[in-house]
View 1 (cartoon, rainbow, N blue to C red):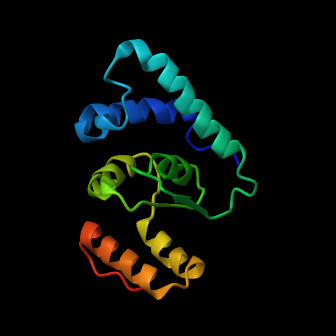
View 2 (cartoon, rainbow, N blue to C red):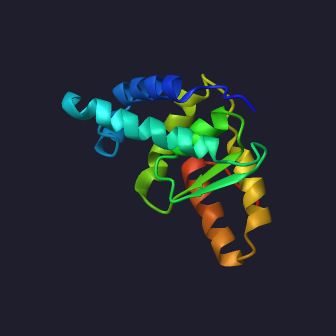
Length: 144
């Protein structure tokens, strides 16, 4: 499968997102200091390309545990790789705004991860926790 959105294009769009969403800048420090930008960019782009290149079957379903703000998951989803990002931290509040920004550039489907999570997990307590968190941050009832 050929990449729909290259790492370089994704990075440039990501920088534009950071300009619009200042809440992400405490984690992603690309715009904080111009002297470190090239190093940070090289690391970021090499990491994403490595991940993309090393996913065997591009039809795989990827679960990015501890994904933070879901940047890798967004990149993979835009390249047609079914990806779910999960985090238990404070990052959730920014996710809806991020998905709104990135849907202009490709298809990202939140509902799919809720369907897949049922296939991967069998712990009723964890499933209930995920349902409650999802409802809180996506403001709709989720059926697991």
